[in-house]
Each structure stands twice: as structure tokens, then as C-alpha cells.
Length: 136
Image 1 (cartoon, rainbow, N blue to C red):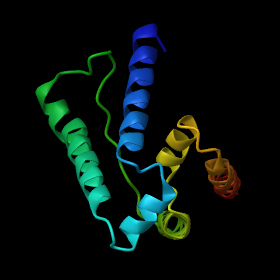
Image 2: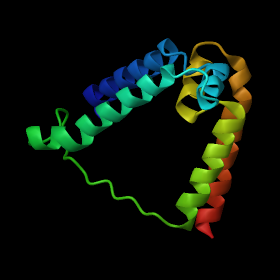
Image 3: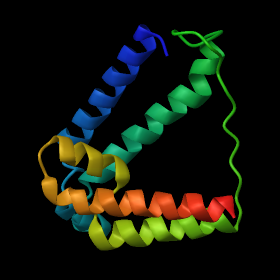
Image 4: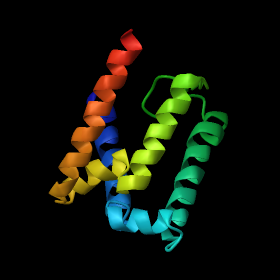
């Protein structure tokens, strides 16, 4: 990875983390109040994320020949199978019980919420178990 690409990755990650912190999505109690239909502020955050994703994956490849930092635009196929459904169910249950999503959990650690270490440890354990299962 060249320096420009590494710097762009760092800047994008910092912007993403700042956006999560600014939107209060790094606070599990805010996420839980959204999931309980008590606070709809995070719906705007999710809508913004969907719009940025649509722009990046659907519109940019049509407007540009290649990405700014080189390479090419790739196709991101998705496969719906039993493992996808099981993973989605596990993610949804974990998110609903704890109010913690992977991206905001890591951003929350950066903001000093060390209680999220437990959630990040659980995410790492889940990823490890999924890797073991996929190898079988």
C-alpha cells in the first residue's frame, strides 16, 4: 500500500469514527432507544450511510474511469445462504441486546468508552469462531 492510499484510508476511518461519535451512535443507550422506537435520530444517520454507499458503489463507477488512487472498481457479489442468515440473526440479536455495533464499538473505544472493550472482545471471539467454522 502506498503512502497516498494509506493516508486516504486513515482519513476515511477518522471521518467515519468522528461521524459515529458526533451522531452519538457510539453510546449503546442511544442505539437501544432507537431500537425501542423511542428516538429516531439514528434513522437519519443510517439514511446518510445508505446514500453515501449508493453514491460510492453505483454512481462513482459510472462517473469515473478508475478510482482516484489507482486500481479499478470491483464488483462486490453477495451470496445468500444458510451462513449469511445465521450471521445476520446473530448480529441482530447481539445488536438488539447490547446496543453495540462493530464500527461504533471501535469508535467508542477511541472516544474513551472502555466499557466497550467487552463488546470488542466478543466481536473478536465471534469472528474467530466464524473463521474456524468456515475452515471446516
